[in-house]
Image 1 (cartoon, rainbow, N blue to C red):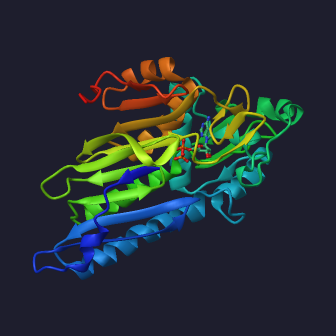
Image 2: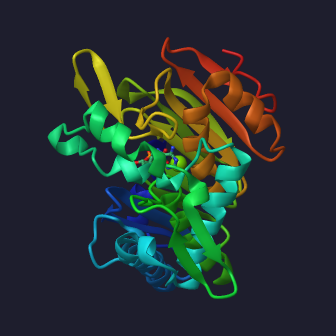
Length: 322
Ligand code: ADP
Ligand code: MG
């Protein structure tokens, strides 16, 4: 979860020159919100509601928790043959597969083939034999995409996909695009660990804090952002502990078990869909390979907190002076 400086306290003071407006709700298993500046407060409020509706629309199509979502329908049927997917879902699956190729399978939405057996709310995890049976199904190359037909098929009977590592970033990116098209020049959009800012905070950069992975009320660092996206993945978002080990929600596709060695990864860059996907990717790659990987993407930077609490910064980010 990224802690953004909230401006909602100032919404009660409408002015003749514009106002900050905002709203939030519980969605996508987290808190989602939007704040924006608009010359006309009523129009601003209407745009806030349009963004929340956009989040809801994406969640309705892409949530594996909803049996009637498009992705659930694909998970039920794509192993039997090609299924037509809506263009938006098809495109996000395609982008996910591209990130799998780039990251040599560290990011892999078929992690869900084993991942669905974890339920962090009830401390449920698969046994090693349950993992072993399904591990071969985790492989993005089982996803067969036909762009001309717009279809998705799974080339292995046990494959399931889950866009949890990328869909929240996609949602805030879509929200930002909607606001930009409507002429909004100052906004902050958030969905759990994923934040997208448009412009600045009217004269100053947005200040976004990266929370301490083991203390929700502390930040490890603060970053000034203008027209940028920032995503943090943490082993504290969804987890339980068992016999001294933390079972959290980011799965190493090679083992079917939660990754070890990193507490949180933050990625900053122009596109929230990619910062979201990359934060999950670096979690799996680990500190060294993660920093090496982010170096190949010049517009993206990363801050990693490892198991010892040490911070590592990618080349483009100087550690803070204090
Ligand atoms: P957060 O939910 O903390 O913001 P992420 O963006 O890293 O963090 O998303 C974590 C989610 O990513 C998990 O809940 C799961 O749905 C999905 N996921 C887990 N492991 C992988 C993986 N190896 N590749 C792609 N997605 C994954
Ligand atoms: Mg992510």
